[in-house]
Length: 59
Image (cartoon, rainbow, N blue to C red; front, side, top):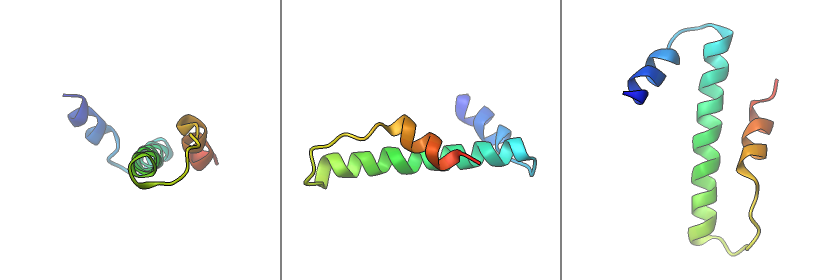
């Protein structure tokens, strides 16, 4: 049910919807990057995902 609401919310051309789309894309990207780093990376550093995501979404 939440996915249906989210997909409906992110359709359209308003600035709020555009920022929602950017935030969703950044969230998915950084979570996937953290997963890949944990599985395949050779670094032991953990980056704070919230800070990376909000940095990408800033205007």
